[in-house]
Image (cartoon, rainbow over all chains, first blue to last red; front, side):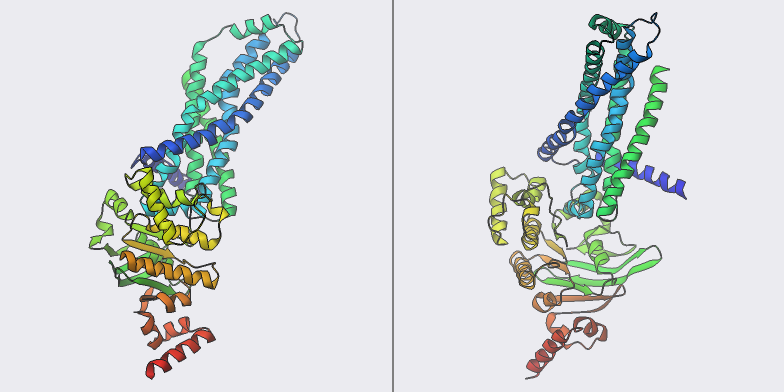
Length: 248
Length: 256
C-alpha cells in the first residue's frame, strides 16, 4: 500500500514536470516572476552561504592540520585537503542540503499557503497554467545556483587559507602549493554537473510538495518538513549516482 | 447562459451529486442554496471545471465543457470571473496589481490601458484610496470588493461567487450583494452564487436552486420561495423566527 502511494507520488511528480513546460505564461509576466525569484532564492541565500562556507572551510583546514601529526607529511596537504573537501563535496552537496532547508521550505510554504488560501484555484479558474506560473520561474532562477556554489567554493578555500596561515598551521606558500597539487580540472566540471542537478531538485521537489498539499496552516508546516526530508534524500541519492558515474 | 444536464459526481463510495439538471440565464443572479453537505460546493466546483463529473454535461452558451480540448477549456476559463469565499487575492501584489492581473495575463493592452480599465472597475466597486495597498492591509469587505473587481475586469460572460458575504457585517454583506446584482444586470453576465445567507436569498435571488442530499429539491425565484409548500425548503429557509415572520407578512401582503 505504502509502495503504491510512493509510486503514485513519483508519477504525479513527473506529470507535474511535464505540465511545467506546457502552455507557458506570457513572457512579459514571466520576466518579472523570474527576477523576483532570483531575488528571493539566489540573492537572499548569498549571506548564509558565504557565512557557512567561510567558517566550514576554516574548520576543514584546522582539523586537517591537527591530524597531521607525522612530521614527514608535508604541510601543503592542508591546502590540498581543504580544496578537495570544499570543491568535491562541501560546496555542491552540503550547501545544497542546507539550501533544501532554506530555499526548499520557503518554496513549499509559499506555494502551500497559496493552495490553502485558494490562490492556486484562482489562477486555474482564470485559465492560467498554475504549475508553469509558479514553478518555471524558480527553475530559471536556479540556473544561477552554480554561481552561489562557485562563491561557496571560493569562500571555503579562502576561509581555509586564513585559518591555516593566521592559525600558524602552514605558511601561505605551503597552503597555495597544496591548492595547486594534483589539480584535476574535471573535478570542477563534476562539481558543477552535480550543482545543476541539485538546482533542478531544489526547484521542483519543494514546489511539488507545496502545490499538491491538502489541509490548512498546520499542513503547510508539515509539507515544508516533508519537502526538506525528500529533497535531502534525493540530493544524497543523486550525489551517489553521479559520483559513481562521473568519477569511478 | 449555463445549462446543466444530469450532473453526477462521486467521491469514493459517496455520490455527492445525483443527476442535477438546471439552467442559469444571463443577466440574472442565480443562487445555489442548501444545508452543509448538500453538495452545493461540489456543484459550483464542477461548474468551474475544478471537479470532473462522472456523468452529465455542462454547457456554456452551447459549448459543452467536457467536449472541449485543453486549450479550448483554458480559453473558456478566461471568460469566467470567480469570487472566492476567502477572496483569494494574491498577497504578493497590491490591489491595483491584483485587479489588473487578468488583463496583463490574457490581453495585449498597454500599461496605460490596463491602468485605465483597472481604475474604472475599482471605481465601480467603490474602492477608495486602496490602489497601492496589499490585501493584508485592507478590511474583509474591501478584499471582497477587490475580488469582485478582479473577477469583472476582463468583461467575463460568467461570474461565480462562493459565499461572497461570509464573514462580513450585515450592512457590508448587503452592499456586496447589491453590487453583484447591479454588475450582473449592467454587463449581462450569467452569475451563479453559492450562499448560506438568507438575506441574499430574499434580496437578490432572481433564480434560486435548492439542493438536498445531492439532488435538486426545488427551484424558483425569491417571490416563489415565499409561497412554496416544499417542506425541505421551508424548513431550511424559514428556520429562524425572524424569517418566519417575514414570510407571514409577505403572504399577508400578497393576499391583499
